[in-house]
Image (cartoon, rainbow, N blue to C red):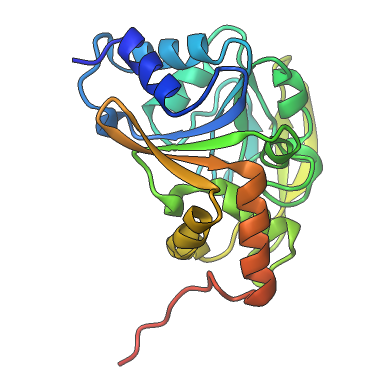
Length: 250
């Protein structure tokens, strides 16, 4: 059975020091049996990255939508698993105000990382925590997940203005920690390009942007945000339709 100490050792074996900025995508099931379960995994992450910046996605794309365009930062749950759901409720965690692609952050620069997501009219825009991960020369940890779950690549597509990735604008009401309400506009993602993000894996490996690790029993992709941006930008500049949805032939 895995413990907090064994999980922290796993993080160290990935070559991490704990002072980094990281975005963690996670599958609790993939990590396996942990003494204390999900809370212990979060304890390990929080303690290991105590001198860094720990972020988990807190996405809500099906909850804050045209039928119910309200994002209440304190009360709306996240759709991406038990670890992000528990993490967003922890003491000291700051959650950003983007209506569909919020991020929860803890540690050094957490308020800075989460402060501006909602200023863009797209998910994962240039003011977002996703872009700030590049500015911090941080890492994305895909814990038991593949590149098809890598929201960061959605961000790269947005920064490069790849065509046909965004739907019609939606007017949202945002409710902050103090109950203040204000309006914001965002264009939701269109289609499912993320199902094709696996196509970038070999290029990321060849460039040294992606290496492998383990957290418990979960395979982990340790991805440099800055190198990932450089590699995927080069791929998309050569072929903007690289991640377009594949059409099955009859």
